[in-house]
Amino acid sequence: MLMTQTMRWFGPEDPVSLRDIRQAGASEVVTALHEVANGDVWPRAAIAARKTMIEQAGLGWSVVESVPVHEVIKTRGPDCDRLIAHYCESLRNLAACGITVVTYNFMPLLDWTRTDLAWAMPDGALALRFELEAVATYDIHILRRPGAEGDYAPALVDAASRRFAAMDDTARTALARTIVAGLPGSEESFTEAEFLAAIDTYAEIGRDQLRANHIAFLQAVCPVAEEVGVQLVVHPDDPPFPIFGLPRTVSTEADVADLFARVPSRANGLCFCAGSFGVRADNDLPGMVDRLGDRIGFLHLRSVQREPDGAFHEAPHLEGDANMAAIVGAVHRLQKRLGRSIPMRPDHGHQMLDDLTKRTNPGYSLLGRMRGLAELRGLERGIAFARADAAHPQITTEEH
Image (cartoon, rainbow, N blue to C red; front, top):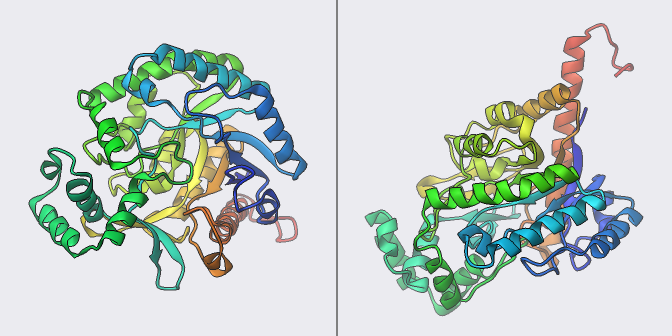
């Protein structure tokens, strides 16, 4: 039993085509109706048309990434009930078209956050990078969030002041755009004024209240998901710690285990992102697959290289701090135990080779992800071969 190999596709406007993805070796795409406004119902006809387009290219579509959770739902603001009803209707429409896994996240305001979208690697490829000093520089001196200095160590505040003083207007604008102008897959973008106003809507919402709001959302939508045969899979926080004074609640194994305990519905599942969880050295990634595996409905396989002072960058898929061989080995055991294939995609590939001269979505150029998919495919097949050989030493190479 091997993983279902997928790639993320951002729809007809994606510079990476369905043909490209098929030739890269994937059998499915994970995608979304990005043109539907956040909070609106996904029309059944539009879902069906997109699925037909994908199938005509020789690919499948069974995983949505993502159906966004509106900020009003996260804050339990006015109109929350109507927006949850819309979410449930979208789930019904997706199920009617054969979509069985729906990814979402519960991160306040920003989706995944990086401070450099083209960080040069030693081999000349470009990677995504997060640097806490850059976040502090933006937060304190560009955004000017009230009380921001109190969220950083004094040495980091001093470093941010020196960094800001050395930056010209072009560099300051580039940093701001990288952080809040929207990244692939995110559904919101902000000006500084809009971002400050949005942050203020969380002024009275701490970690405990955000968790309670998340649980309330799941209690409302999981019965519908169960009824129509859809598994909701939450993507962990990225990065997995608070930024801009905003709380995080899906950052550790304990966070996920608590969410499952509070909402035991089988429709309440996990998108296991090795990169997001792997930013924290206290997350045991292979052990999390073993212990949380019954609820894992989707896999993001990537590795990050942790750096000093809270920084990290996207490493090649089989390098960095994630022990990818151990993670894939745990997934192989899990699939064998459950008797099912889990959809996987290589995440956040490097921009490399010919893609260095092309228009690409940051983290989602073709060739870096194709390299990652090939490496992960080879790793998984090697693990499967070795385990079959160990279990049946009498089998010859030809019989494999």
